[in-house]
Image 1 (cartoon, one colour):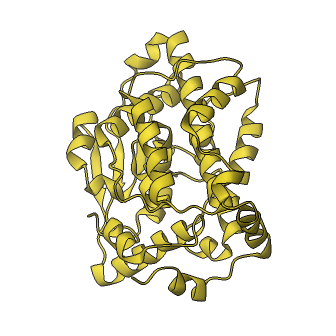
Image 2 (cartoon, one colour):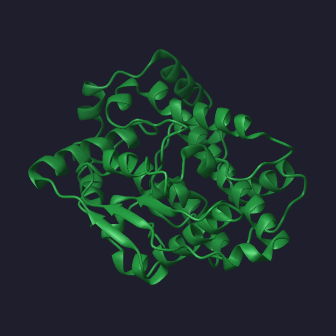
Image 3 (cartoon, helix red, strand yellow):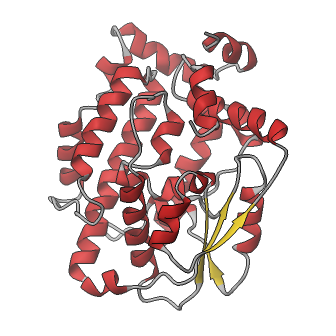
Length: 310
């Protein structure tokens, strides 16, 4: 199978990335350097939020999904040291977000009554112009798109200001291009830009983000749970603000469009189109680059199946 050779010939890792990964090799494997133990991550998240321990049940059995996800990452993800660090940070951030989101919803039960009316949902094949259309429609003052910083850090903790949360998000977003500079030409990530729903639903441990960042072919996304988390977060972000139509986006809605309408029956869907002979190679290249950020072994045939929606 063509795997690492193609990408290694195309991309040169920055020296600092290579050195961090070598630290994993020097102790007999990156897993010995950076743990992804599910129980330890849960304990760390609880400790980091001052003892908050309710992760919420608004999207079903999150703990089973979380444990299963980590098991698959360990079994087939083949993450290098920096890849494990990036993934550990996302797992911990997701856990912390769940804790803070659950606290907010418990303290303000009215959040659960928020109506998400007539969202505008952009979908279509990857690399078909969905991102630029998303950013364009988000400029409408009568609409609202979820911004990266408010999705990555939707609720304050320990008095963190909005500016502090934006700074944290900016560091994380810019890091993708730091790890592999070519990524900046593929997809722009900024704290103040709209972010698509695969990022929004990361803390559900059920959606498309995880299958994009790593080779975990035996892991199955739970899209009903994904949409339950999606609604819970939008309700929380919307609560107390002026009513505006949400603008949302992800190509993955093509896979579960029925669940989208079950969750938001009055959604307006904008479906982009582009020649598949252009979108498929571009989409596969993007997916391979995303996985290359975290692993030295990228299975291109398997990635191709993900890109085609298999």
